[in-house]
Structures are given as structure tokens and as C-alpha cells.
Length: 69
Length: 335
Image (cartoon, rainbow over all chains, first blue to last red):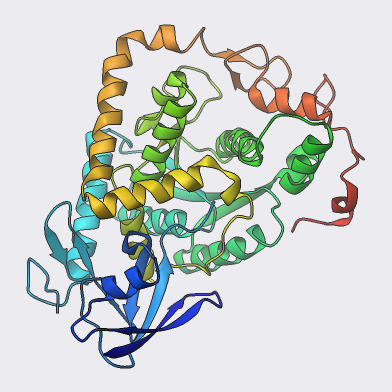
């Protein structure tokens, strides 16, 4: 199993998520019931596609796409 | 690792609908090509323009301002100015104005901020409260949209604008399309094209949507990659809107069936084309001038003056009526 930290930028929404080895960011979001269509993803400070695999202790920051009003 | 379909570098974006992955460099190239194609295809700008970019301080409008300022370096006849309408939404607009000012300064762009409070006598928060007390049937987003469009057109004209560019993206457009299907408002659907306001009225400034074919996710990614992404803050009235729910459903559909959004845009463009001949029947009557303010109107009064009379914040001569009871909000000043 791999453990990653997920945060939504500028909010206090934060989770520790455990996923299978080889899981992708998309799988992490699915576990949190978040739609990848609605977030830009940065992993350890670098913008990446949501089909990237996650590694132990990765820090995933999510930039909501559906902000505003 | 997901690799760029063009150079093999690490991808920052995957378009399932197009079956391609993009690294930062190739995403920005793809974005630029797509917007320039939209501008050309719909003849949005001529060689000499004073383009007023309507900004809110949100990611889409900051991305559009950044993009057009960059593009204008290649077109000597273009002048870019930014216009922000401050509705006075406490806890929301103050934040987005700060983000706007930071970007406007970085880009050295001339700008103007117009405020509901100065122009209408009341902030949006106060208007909503007055409307509630009077039991008027309007949604917060209706007041906001009507007054914002009214002030945008008026202020853009005062700034010498020849065209207004708004940051509506593909997602915004198809959400509005669906909202108007639900409401059976075909007269609004025929106006949902990439260019609007061609109806001849001397006070009407043409509006264009350069991000018409850009997905909201692409516009957000452009903002993140160019360090424009503002502090995340959501309008407190947003979740009261049908748009908020439609957006969620459409995003779910897109995730399950990639290409849904492009398909919906094609559906919209097709229906606009099919309705073209019937437009005069769908939009009743010709464009007139409002009897009170002289701005473009489809009836004797424009929608902004109709609302102001109903709210009793303006008299029939167009004078602001001060001191309307706004309850506890009366002591709050919008910035």
C-alpha cells in the first residue's frame, strides 16, 4: 500500500489516503469522491496529469477548476 | 509516467477527448493555437481595436487578460484595457480584486473598477436583501448578471472600447445552453454565439468570447502554469444557482464519456445556425433605447431600470433613491 497526502489549495480540506501500489492520482481522487475533471493536480510541487502513478508520501495539491461564481 | 504525445516529456495535461497528452510547452502551444483559431474563425477583432477585457479577478478572466496582453504585442493596432465590475459581495470580491490588481500591475495594463454602490447606490448584497424584503421573485444571480452587463457596456463605452472580451469558456457556454433549454428561453440561446451584440444600437459595444472553445480545465491550467491562479474563493451565491448543479452533472458525464462537452458545443452552434432565419421571430421586436437611461433595451425600459424601479432604489427620472432599508447590511461598506 502507498500513503499520500491530498490538499485542496487555500482551504482546510486535507486527507491522508491509502491506495494500492501502482495506483494513479485519478484513483486517489476517486477514493475521495472528487472528479478529476474539476481539479488541476500538482504532485510534490509540480503540475502533473491525473494519470500519473502516486508514490509513498507524495503531497498532492488540488487547484479547483470550478471556482468563481 | 504519462508522456507528451509530441516530445515525450512529462505531461501536464491529457485530453481524453482528443486522445493526446501535452507537456507544459506543448500545452501552451495548443492553447494559443486554439484561441487564435477561435478569434480568426469568428472574426472577433479587426486590426485596430480598443479591447476592454471584462475581469472579475477569477482564474478565467486573469488568464484572458494575460493571453490578450501577450497577443497584443504582435498586433500594433490593439490597445488592451481591463474593466472590473465590483458588485459588492462581502468576503468574495475583496479577495478577487487583490488578485486582479496584482496581475494588472505585472502586465502594466490600464484598468478601471466600477462599483454597484457608486453607480446604483447599493451593493449587490444590499440589493438582494431589498429584493427579499419586497418578495421580488429574482435570484441573486439575476440581479448580478443584469446589473453587471449594464455597467460593463456603459463603462466600456466610456473607456473608449470598441469591443468587450469576456472570459466565458466552453463550460460556461454549454451550462448556459442547458439552463436556457430548461427555462425554454430560446431567445437567449440564439444569443449564445461567440460574438454578440451585432444588433445596431449606438450605445451597444460588441462582445466576444475568445475562450469559447477552451475547456474550463484548460483555462485553469493556463492560469496555474503562468502563476496567475488566484486565491481560491467561491461566490457565496454560486451554490444557489441551477448552474452549479448542471456543472457537476456535465463534469460527471465528461469523465464517463470524454468529448461530451465538445459535442454539446457543436449542438449549440448547430441550433443557433438552424434558428438563424427565425431569429427575428424568436427575439420579439427590435432593439430600442431605454426611456429612462437611454441604454439598449428590448422593451420601453431596459432590464436594469426595470429591476431598479421594482426594488425602488431609483425613481422614474433615473435618480437614485437613497436610504432604502437594507437591515443589518446598511452598516456594511463594500470596498
